[in-house]
Image 1 (cartoon, chains in turn cyan, purple):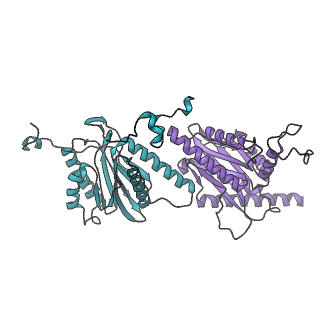
Image 2: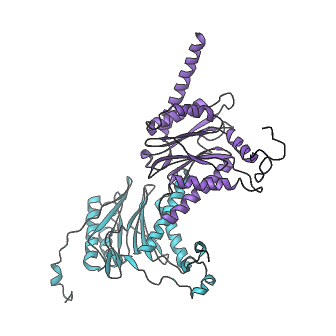
Length: 247
Length: 256
Protein backbone atom coordinates (compact mmCIF):
# COMPACT_ATOMS: atom_id res chain seq x y z
CA UNK A 1 0.00 0.00 0.00
CA UNK A 2 1.16 3.50 -0.70
CA UNK A 3 2.60 4.77 2.60
CA UNK A 4 0.69 8.06 2.50
CA UNK A 5 -2.71 6.37 2.46
CA UNK A 6 -1.76 3.65 4.93
CA UNK A 7 -4.39 3.70 7.67
CA UNK A 8 -3.30 3.31 11.24
CA UNK A 9 -5.74 2.03 13.87
CA UNK A 10 -6.23 5.44 15.48
CA UNK A 11 -7.04 7.08 12.14
CA UNK A 12 -9.85 4.66 11.35
CA UNK A 13 -13.45 5.64 11.85
CA UNK A 14 -16.28 3.36 12.95
CA UNK A 15 -16.28 -0.15 14.40
CA UNK A 16 -16.45 -2.04 11.09
CA UNK A 17 -13.27 -0.43 9.78
CA UNK A 18 -11.26 -1.66 12.73
CA UNK A 19 -12.17 -5.34 12.27
CA UNK A 20 -8.70 -6.20 11.07
CA UNK A 21 -7.19 -4.68 14.20
CA UNK A 22 -9.46 -6.38 16.74
CA UNK A 23 -12.33 -4.82 18.66
CA UNK A 24 -12.83 -1.07 19.05
CA UNK A 25 -11.03 0.16 22.14
CA UNK A 26 -11.56 3.32 24.18
CA UNK A 27 -9.67 5.23 26.81
CA UNK A 28 -10.34 3.47 30.10
CA UNK A 29 -8.00 5.49 32.26
CA UNK A 30 -6.14 8.78 32.01
CA UNK A 31 -2.36 8.51 31.63
CA UNK A 32 -0.55 11.79 32.26
CA UNK A 33 -2.74 13.72 34.67
CA UNK A 34 -3.09 17.06 36.37
CA UNK A 35 -4.71 17.32 39.77
CA UNK A 36 -7.14 19.89 41.26
CA UNK A 37 -8.20 23.29 39.95
CA UNK A 38 -9.73 25.77 42.39
CA UNK A 39 -11.73 28.83 41.35
CA UNK A 40 -14.11 31.36 42.85
CA UNK A 41 -15.70 34.73 42.26
CA UNK A 42 -14.54 37.84 44.11
CA UNK A 43 -15.32 41.54 43.97
CA UNK A 44 -13.50 42.39 40.71
CA UNK A 45 -13.95 39.14 38.80
CA UNK A 46 -12.87 35.56 39.17
CA UNK A 47 -9.73 33.90 40.46
CA UNK A 48 -8.44 30.46 39.58
CA UNK A 49 -5.39 28.39 40.50
CA UNK A 50 -3.74 25.13 39.53
CA UNK A 51 -0.29 23.69 40.08
CA UNK A 52 2.30 23.03 37.37
CA UNK A 53 2.53 19.26 37.70
CA UNK A 54 1.53 16.62 35.19
CA UNK A 55 1.84 13.25 36.94
CA UNK A 56 2.47 9.88 35.31
CA UNK A 57 0.59 7.73 37.77
CA UNK A 58 2.25 8.51 41.11
CA UNK A 59 5.42 9.76 39.39
CA UNK A 60 5.85 13.54 39.34
CA UNK A 61 6.73 13.36 35.64
CA UNK A 62 6.35 16.88 34.16
CA UNK A 63 6.87 19.70 36.64
CA UNK A 64 6.56 22.73 34.41
CA UNK A 65 3.18 22.36 32.73
CA UNK A 66 0.65 25.16 32.53
CA UNK A 67 -2.84 23.94 33.38
CA UNK A 68 -4.44 27.36 33.06
CA UNK A 69 -5.24 28.42 29.51
CA UNK A 70 -6.17 31.88 28.36
CA UNK A 71 -8.97 31.17 25.90
CA UNK A 72 -9.63 34.78 24.91
CA UNK A 73 -9.48 38.29 26.35
CA UNK A 74 -12.18 37.51 28.94
CA UNK A 75 -11.92 33.79 29.62
CA UNK A 76 -9.59 31.32 31.33
CA UNK A 77 -9.83 27.58 31.41
CA UNK A 78 -8.50 25.45 34.27
CA UNK A 79 -7.85 21.77 33.60
CA UNK A 80 -7.48 18.59 35.57
CA UNK A 81 -7.33 15.05 34.26
CA UNK A 82 -5.55 13.75 31.15
CA UNK A 83 -3.09 16.27 29.76
CA UNK A 84 -3.18 14.75 26.28
CA UNK A 85 -6.94 15.17 26.14
CA UNK A 86 -6.47 18.73 27.38
CA UNK A 87 -4.04 19.50 24.56
CA UNK A 88 -6.62 18.18 22.11
CA UNK A 89 -9.27 20.43 23.64
CA UNK A 90 -6.84 23.35 23.65
CA UNK A 91 -6.30 23.02 19.91
CA UNK A 92 -10.04 22.72 19.36
CA UNK A 93 -10.66 25.91 21.31
CA UNK A 94 -7.88 27.71 19.46
CA UNK A 95 -9.55 26.69 16.20
CA UNK A 96 -12.85 28.08 17.43
CA UNK A 97 -11.19 31.35 18.42
CA UNK A 98 -9.42 31.59 15.04
CA UNK A 99 -12.72 31.02 13.28
CA UNK A 100 -14.32 33.78 15.35
CA UNK A 101 -11.42 36.13 14.61
CA UNK A 102 -11.70 35.47 10.88
CA UNK A 103 -15.41 36.42 10.95
CA UNK A 104 -14.25 39.94 11.89
CA UNK A 105 -17.78 41.00 12.84
CA UNK A 106 -16.82 42.97 15.93
CA UNK A 107 -18.25 40.27 18.17
CA UNK A 108 -16.14 38.42 20.67
CA UNK A 109 -17.10 35.00 21.96
CA UNK A 110 -18.04 35.56 25.61
CA UNK A 111 -17.24 33.33 28.56
CA UNK A 112 -20.75 31.86 28.60
CA UNK A 113 -20.42 30.88 24.95
CA UNK A 114 -17.01 29.32 25.51
CA UNK A 115 -18.49 27.37 28.43
CA UNK A 116 -21.43 26.23 26.30
CA UNK A 117 -19.12 25.20 23.46
CA UNK A 118 -16.86 23.27 25.82
CA UNK A 119 -19.72 21.47 27.57
CA UNK A 120 -21.30 20.53 24.24
CA UNK A 121 -18.03 18.96 23.11
CA UNK A 122 -17.66 17.10 26.42
CA UNK A 123 -21.25 15.85 26.40
CA UNK A 124 -20.95 14.84 22.74
CA UNK A 125 -17.81 12.84 23.47
CA UNK A 126 -19.33 10.99 26.42
CA UNK A 127 -22.45 10.26 24.36
CA UNK A 128 -20.22 8.59 21.77
CA UNK A 129 -18.75 6.65 24.68
CA UNK A 130 -15.37 8.21 23.92
CA UNK A 131 -14.93 10.88 26.60
CA UNK A 132 -12.11 13.36 27.04
CA UNK A 133 -10.80 12.44 30.49
CA UNK A 134 -10.90 15.88 32.07
CA UNK A 135 -12.67 18.14 34.50
CA UNK A 136 -12.67 21.74 33.34
CA UNK A 137 -13.46 25.00 35.06
CA UNK A 138 -14.28 27.92 32.79
CA UNK A 139 -14.08 31.37 34.34
CA UNK A 140 -14.42 34.88 33.07
CA UNK A 141 -16.27 38.15 32.89
CA UNK A 142 -19.00 38.24 30.27
CA UNK A 143 -20.65 41.60 29.68
CA UNK A 144 -19.81 42.76 33.21
CA UNK A 145 -21.12 39.52 34.72
CA UNK A 146 -18.79 37.06 36.47
CA UNK A 147 -19.14 33.56 35.08
CA UNK A 148 -17.82 30.37 36.61
CA UNK A 149 -18.77 26.93 35.28
CA UNK A 150 -17.71 23.32 35.66
CA UNK A 151 -17.80 20.51 33.11
CA UNK A 152 -16.36 17.02 33.31
CA UNK A 153 -15.89 13.84 31.28
CA UNK A 154 -19.54 12.81 31.83
CA UNK A 155 -20.74 16.09 30.38
CA UNK A 156 -21.98 17.14 33.81
CA UNK A 157 -22.23 20.89 34.12
CA UNK A 158 -22.93 23.26 36.98
CA UNK A 159 -22.21 26.86 37.83
CA UNK A 160 -21.46 28.32 41.25
CA UNK A 161 -19.66 31.16 43.01
CA UNK A 162 -16.90 28.77 44.01
CA UNK A 163 -15.77 25.62 42.25
CA UNK A 164 -13.07 22.99 42.40
CA UNK A 165 -12.14 19.82 40.54
CA UNK A 166 -10.64 16.51 41.68
CA UNK A 167 -9.34 16.43 45.25
CA UNK A 168 -10.21 20.09 45.47
CA UNK A 169 -13.87 19.09 45.56
CA UNK A 170 -13.23 17.40 48.90
CA UNK A 171 -10.60 19.68 50.37
CA UNK A 172 -11.05 23.17 48.89
CA UNK A 173 -14.83 23.37 48.53
CA UNK A 174 -15.49 23.26 52.33
CA UNK A 175 -13.07 26.15 52.79
CA UNK A 176 -14.64 28.09 49.92
CA UNK A 177 -18.16 27.42 51.28
CA UNK A 178 -17.13 29.08 54.52
CA UNK A 179 -15.06 31.95 53.17
CA UNK A 180 -16.56 32.78 49.76
CA UNK A 181 -20.20 31.70 49.39
CA UNK A 182 -22.51 34.67 49.94
CA UNK A 183 -19.55 37.07 50.17
CA UNK A 184 -18.37 37.06 46.54
CA UNK A 185 -19.17 40.77 46.19
CA UNK A 186 -17.11 41.83 49.21
CA UNK A 187 -13.89 39.89 48.72
CA UNK A 188 -11.02 42.13 47.69
CA UNK A 189 -8.23 40.90 45.47
CA UNK A 190 -5.92 40.74 48.47
CA UNK A 191 -8.33 38.55 50.41
CA UNK A 192 -9.01 36.43 47.33
CA UNK A 193 -5.30 35.69 47.00
CA UNK A 194 -5.16 34.74 50.70
CA UNK A 195 -8.16 32.40 50.36
CA UNK A 196 -6.75 30.84 47.21
CA UNK A 197 -3.34 30.27 48.77
CA UNK A 198 -4.97 28.67 51.83
CA UNK A 199 -6.92 26.27 49.60
CA UNK A 200 -3.85 25.39 47.57
CA UNK A 201 -1.82 24.90 50.75
CA UNK A 202 -4.35 22.43 52.18
CA UNK A 203 -4.32 20.58 48.86
CA UNK A 204 -0.55 20.55 48.89
CA UNK A 205 -0.50 19.03 52.37
CA UNK A 206 -3.14 16.38 51.74
CA UNK A 207 -3.18 15.59 47.99
CA UNK A 208 -0.17 13.46 47.07
CA UNK A 209 -0.46 14.53 43.40
CA UNK A 210 -0.23 18.22 44.26
CA UNK A 211 2.94 20.22 43.76
CA UNK A 212 4.40 23.35 45.34
CA UNK A 213 4.74 25.26 42.11
CA UNK A 214 1.53 26.81 40.98
CA UNK A 215 -0.04 29.53 38.89
CA UNK A 216 -2.90 31.81 39.73
CA UNK A 217 -5.13 33.42 37.14
CA UNK A 218 -7.52 36.31 37.52
CA UNK A 219 -10.07 37.65 35.11
CA UNK A 220 -11.36 41.16 35.70
CA UNK A 221 -12.91 43.82 33.49
CA UNK A 222 -9.29 44.62 32.51
CA UNK A 223 -8.80 41.16 31.04
CA UNK A 224 -7.00 37.93 31.80
CA UNK A 225 -3.85 37.71 33.88
CA UNK A 226 -2.05 34.43 34.52
CA UNK A 227 0.77 34.65 37.06
CA UNK A 228 4.23 33.21 36.72
CA UNK A 229 4.75 30.01 38.76
CA UNK A 230 5.19 30.63 42.50
CA UNK A 231 5.50 28.58 45.66
CA UNK A 232 3.65 28.63 49.00
CA UNK A 233 5.26 28.79 52.42
CA UNK A 234 4.68 25.44 54.14
CA UNK A 235 5.36 23.97 57.52
CA UNK A 236 5.71 20.20 57.64
CA UNK A 237 6.63 19.99 61.33
CA UNK A 238 2.90 19.55 62.09
CA UNK A 239 3.11 16.21 60.38
CA UNK A 240 4.83 14.50 63.30
CA UNK A 241 2.06 15.41 65.70
CA UNK A 242 -0.72 14.12 63.48
CA UNK A 243 -1.95 10.79 64.76
CA UNK A 244 -2.05 8.11 62.11
CA UNK A 245 0.12 10.10 59.70
CA UNK A 246 2.99 8.25 58.15
CA UNK A 247 4.83 5.71 60.26
CA UNK B 1 -7.02 40.27 -29.43
CA UNK B 2 -7.30 39.30 -33.06
CA UNK B 3 -7.92 35.66 -32.29
CA UNK B 4 -11.23 36.35 -30.53
CA UNK B 5 -14.09 34.50 -32.14
CA UNK B 6 -11.85 31.92 -33.71
CA UNK B 7 -13.17 29.25 -31.37
CA UNK B 8 -10.09 29.01 -29.19
CA UNK B 9 -11.48 31.16 -26.40
CA UNK B 10 -14.22 28.88 -25.13
CA UNK B 11 -12.28 26.38 -23.07
CA UNK B 12 -9.30 26.42 -20.74
CA UNK B 13 -8.32 22.99 -21.96
CA UNK B 14 -7.48 24.20 -25.46
CA UNK B 15 -4.57 26.41 -26.44
CA UNK B 16 -4.93 28.84 -29.31
CA UNK B 17 -2.52 28.25 -32.23
CA UNK B 18 -0.26 31.01 -30.90
CA UNK B 19 -0.05 29.30 -27.50
CA UNK B 20 -2.49 31.22 -25.35
CA UNK B 21 -5.34 30.19 -23.09
CA UNK B 22 -7.91 32.90 -23.66
CA UNK B 23 -10.17 32.05 -20.73
CA UNK B 24 -7.33 32.84 -18.37
CA UNK B 25 -6.77 36.18 -20.09
CA UNK B 26 -10.50 36.96 -19.84
CA UNK B 27 -10.36 36.14 -16.13
CA UNK B 28 -7.58 38.69 -15.88
CA UNK B 29 -9.92 41.20 -17.54
CA UNK B 30 -12.50 40.54 -14.83
CA UNK B 31 -9.82 41.56 -12.35
CA UNK B 32 -8.97 44.68 -14.33
CA UNK B 33 -12.60 45.86 -14.10
CA UNK B 34 -12.53 45.82 -10.32
CA UNK B 35 -11.68 48.57 -7.84
CA UNK B 36 -7.96 48.86 -7.12
CA UNK B 37 -6.33 46.73 -4.43
CA UNK B 38 -2.76 47.29 -3.28
CA UNK B 39 -0.30 45.79 -0.84
CA UNK B 40 2.81 47.39 0.63
CA UNK B 41 5.52 45.42 2.40
CA UNK B 42 7.51 47.77 4.62
CA UNK B 43 10.20 47.33 7.24
CA UNK B 44 7.95 46.54 10.22
CA UNK B 45 4.82 45.09 8.66
CA UNK B 46 2.47 44.84 5.72
CA UNK B 47 -0.38 47.13 4.70
CA UNK B 48 -3.33 46.29 2.45
CA UNK B 49 -5.64 48.87 0.89
CA UNK B 50 -8.66 48.53 -1.33
CA UNK B 51 -10.77 50.99 -3.28
CA UNK B 52 -14.19 49.49 -2.61
CA UNK B 53 -16.51 50.79 -5.29
CA UNK B 54 -20.06 51.19 -4.02
CA UNK B 55 -23.00 50.81 -6.36
CA UNK B 56 -25.42 52.51 -3.99
CA UNK B 57 -25.50 55.16 -1.31
CA UNK B 58 -27.79 52.90 0.67
CA UNK B 59 -25.05 50.40 1.53
CA UNK B 60 -24.08 50.27 5.19
CA UNK B 61 -20.59 51.74 5.66
CA UNK B 62 -17.91 49.06 6.07
CA UNK B 63 -20.21 46.33 4.79
CA UNK B 64 -19.22 43.92 1.98
CA UNK B 65 -15.62 43.77 3.06
CA UNK B 66 -13.01 43.21 0.39
CA UNK B 67 -10.18 42.64 2.80
CA UNK B 68 -10.62 39.51 4.87
CA UNK B 69 -8.64 37.45 7.36
CA UNK B 70 -7.51 33.87 6.93
CA UNK B 71 -6.29 32.23 10.12
CA UNK B 72 -5.64 35.32 12.27
CA UNK B 73 -2.22 36.27 10.91
CA UNK B 74 -2.95 36.43 7.18
CA UNK B 75 -4.72 39.25 5.39
CA UNK B 76 -6.36 38.72 2.00
CA UNK B 77 -7.17 41.70 -0.20
CA UNK B 78 -8.65 41.07 -3.59
CA UNK B 79 -9.54 42.60 -6.89
CA UNK B 80 -12.14 40.90 -9.05
CA UNK B 81 -15.34 38.99 -8.51
CA UNK B 82 -16.36 39.09 -4.88
CA UNK B 83 -18.11 35.72 -5.04
CA UNK B 84 -14.91 34.09 -6.28
CA UNK B 85 -12.97 35.97 -3.62
CA UNK B 86 -15.13 34.57 -0.85
CA UNK B 87 -14.56 31.09 -2.17
CA UNK B 88 -10.80 31.62 -2.26
CA UNK B 89 -10.76 33.15 1.20
CA UNK B 90 -12.60 30.11 2.50
CA UNK B 91 -9.98 27.96 0.82
CA UNK B 92 -7.19 30.04 2.37
CA UNK B 93 -8.78 29.60 5.81
CA UNK B 94 -9.07 25.87 5.28
CA UNK B 95 -5.43 25.68 4.20
CA UNK B 96 -4.30 27.73 7.22
CA UNK B 97 -6.37 25.53 9.52
CA UNK B 98 -5.14 22.33 7.89
CA UNK B 99 -1.50 23.39 8.19
CA UNK B 100 -2.04 24.36 11.80
CA UNK B 101 -3.70 21.09 12.70
CA UNK B 102 -0.83 19.11 11.17
CA UNK B 103 2.17 21.17 12.32
CA UNK B 104 0.71 23.10 15.30
CA UNK B 105 2.28 26.23 13.87
CA UNK B 106 0.99 29.15 11.82
CA UNK B 107 1.26 28.59 8.10
CA UNK B 108 4.16 30.57 6.58
CA UNK B 109 3.26 33.11 3.87
CA UNK B 110 5.24 31.26 1.23
CA UNK B 111 3.36 28.02 1.85
CA UNK B 112 -0.10 29.52 1.80
CA UNK B 113 0.76 31.50 -1.34
CA UNK B 114 1.96 28.32 -2.97
CA UNK B 115 -1.09 26.32 -1.94
CA UNK B 116 -3.43 29.07 -3.13
CA UNK B 117 -1.47 29.29 -6.38
CA UNK B 118 -1.80 25.55 -6.95
CA UNK B 119 -5.51 25.66 -6.22
CA UNK B 120 -6.17 28.56 -8.58
CA UNK B 121 -3.99 26.96 -11.25
CA UNK B 122 -6.08 23.77 -11.15
CA UNK B 123 -8.99 25.85 -12.44
CA UNK B 124 -7.04 26.61 -15.63
CA UNK B 125 -6.76 22.96 -16.61
CA UNK B 126 -10.23 21.56 -17.22
CA UNK B 127 -12.94 22.43 -19.69
CA UNK B 128 -15.57 21.83 -17.03
CA UNK B 129 -14.45 24.74 -14.85
CA UNK B 130 -13.74 28.40 -15.32
CA UNK B 131 -10.67 30.19 -13.90
CA UNK B 132 -11.13 32.47 -10.91
CA UNK B 133 -11.82 36.10 -11.76
CA UNK B 134 -9.70 37.39 -8.90
CA UNK B 135 -6.21 38.43 -7.99
CA UNK B 136 -5.65 37.89 -4.29
CA UNK B 137 -3.04 39.78 -2.33
CA UNK B 138 -1.79 37.93 0.75
CA UNK B 139 -0.22 39.85 3.63
CA UNK B 140 1.50 38.17 6.53
CA UNK B 141 4.31 38.53 9.04
CA UNK B 142 6.05 35.23 9.71
CA UNK B 143 9.43 34.15 11.07
CA UNK B 144 11.15 35.65 8.01
CA UNK B 145 9.52 39.04 8.61
CA UNK B 146 6.84 40.86 6.62
CA UNK B 147 5.64 39.01 3.51
CA UNK B 148 3.49 40.02 0.57
CA UNK B 149 2.31 37.73 -2.21
CA UNK B 150 -0.11 38.07 -5.08
CA UNK B 151 -1.91 35.13 -6.68
CA UNK B 152 -3.27 35.76 -10.16
CA UNK B 153 -6.07 33.97 -12.09
CA UNK B 154 -3.43 31.97 -13.99
CA UNK B 155 -2.23 30.52 -10.69
CA UNK B 156 0.96 32.52 -10.85
CA UNK B 157 2.05 33.56 -7.36
CA UNK B 158 4.89 35.97 -6.79
CA UNK B 159 6.32 37.69 -3.71
CA UNK B 160 6.41 41.48 -3.83
CA UNK B 161 7.59 44.53 -1.93
CA UNK B 162 4.57 46.37 -3.32
CA UNK B 163 1.85 45.22 -5.67
CA UNK B 164 -1.41 46.37 -7.19
CA UNK B 165 -4.37 44.86 -9.01
CA UNK B 166 -7.59 46.21 -10.50
CA UNK B 167 -8.60 49.28 -12.46
CA UNK B 168 -6.00 51.66 -11.13
CA UNK B 169 -3.09 49.25 -11.08
CA UNK B 170 -0.97 51.26 -13.54
CA UNK B 171 -1.28 54.50 -11.57
CA UNK B 172 -0.86 52.62 -8.30
CA UNK B 173 2.24 50.75 -9.46
CA UNK B 174 3.88 53.98 -10.65
CA UNK B 175 3.18 55.55 -7.26
CA UNK B 176 4.40 52.49 -5.33
CA UNK B 177 7.65 52.48 -7.32
CA UNK B 178 8.36 55.99 -6.04
CA UNK B 179 8.21 54.86 -2.41
CA UNK B 180 11.21 53.72 -0.41
CA UNK B 181 9.35 50.69 0.95
CA UNK B 182 12.22 49.26 2.97
CA UNK B 183 12.51 52.52 4.92
CA UNK B 184 8.82 53.13 5.62
CA UNK B 185 7.06 52.20 8.83
CA UNK B 186 3.52 50.78 8.74
CA UNK B 187 2.17 54.04 10.15
CA UNK B 188 3.64 55.90 7.17
CA UNK B 189 2.69 53.12 4.76
CA UNK B 190 -0.96 53.35 5.82
CA UNK B 191 -1.00 57.02 4.76
CA UNK B 192 0.81 56.29 1.51
CA UNK B 193 -1.56 53.42 0.75
CA UNK B 194 -4.57 55.69 1.31
CA UNK B 195 -3.02 58.37 -0.90
CA UNK B 196 -2.34 55.88 -3.69
CA UNK B 197 -5.88 54.47 -3.60
CA UNK B 198 -7.28 58.01 -3.77
CA UNK B 199 -4.90 58.88 -6.62
CA UNK B 200 -5.84 55.72 -8.52
CA UNK B 201 -9.54 56.42 -8.09
CA UNK B 202 -11.19 57.70 -11.25
CA UNK B 203 -13.97 60.10 -10.32
CA UNK B 204 -15.30 60.02 -13.89
CA UNK B 205 -15.87 56.25 -13.88
CA UNK B 206 -17.06 55.60 -10.34
CA UNK B 207 -18.36 58.26 -8.02
CA UNK B 208 -18.85 56.37 -4.80
CA UNK B 209 -16.12 54.44 -3.10
CA UNK B 210 -14.89 53.53 0.33
CA UNK B 211 -11.30 53.02 1.41
CA UNK B 212 -10.54 49.78 3.20
CA UNK B 213 -7.25 49.61 5.06
CA UNK B 214 -5.71 46.78 7.03
CA UNK B 215 -2.34 45.82 8.40
CA UNK B 216 -0.23 43.13 9.99
CA UNK B 217 2.29 44.69 12.38
CA UNK B 218 3.36 44.97 16.02
CA UNK B 219 0.51 47.38 16.70
CA UNK B 220 -2.03 44.72 15.67
CA UNK B 221 -0.19 42.08 17.70
CA UNK B 222 1.26 40.59 14.48
CA UNK B 223 -2.28 39.59 13.56
CA UNK B 224 -4.17 40.80 10.54
CA UNK B 225 -6.68 43.51 11.42
CA UNK B 226 -8.43 46.45 9.85
CA UNK B 227 -6.72 49.65 11.00
CA UNK B 228 -8.41 51.46 13.90
CA UNK B 229 -10.94 54.17 13.01
CA UNK B 230 -8.67 57.09 14.02
CA UNK B 231 -5.79 55.78 11.90
CA UNK B 232 -8.18 55.32 8.97
CA UNK B 233 -9.56 58.85 9.41
CA UNK B 234 -6.02 60.29 9.52
CA UNK B 235 -5.05 58.37 6.40
CA UNK B 236 -8.13 59.55 4.51
CA UNK B 237 -7.46 63.14 5.55
CA UNK B 238 -3.86 62.81 4.36
CA UNK B 239 -5.03 61.30 1.05
CA UNK B 240 -7.59 64.04 0.40
CA UNK B 241 -5.13 66.80 1.24
CA UNK B 242 -2.47 65.46 -1.11
CA UNK B 243 -5.08 65.11 -3.87
CA UNK B 244 -6.06 68.76 -3.42
CA UNK B 245 -2.40 69.80 -3.52
CA UNK B 246 -1.94 67.95 -6.79
CA UNK B 247 -4.98 69.74 -8.24
CA UNK B 248 -3.61 73.09 -7.12
CA UNK B 249 -0.26 72.32 -8.75
CA UNK B 250 -1.98 71.47 -11.99
CA UNK B 251 -3.95 74.71 -11.94
CA UNK B 252 -0.79 76.68 -11.34
CA UNK B 253 0.81 74.92 -14.29
CA UNK B 254 -2.14 75.92 -16.44
CA UNK B 255 -1.87 79.56 -15.31
CA UNK B 256 1.71 79.64 -16.46
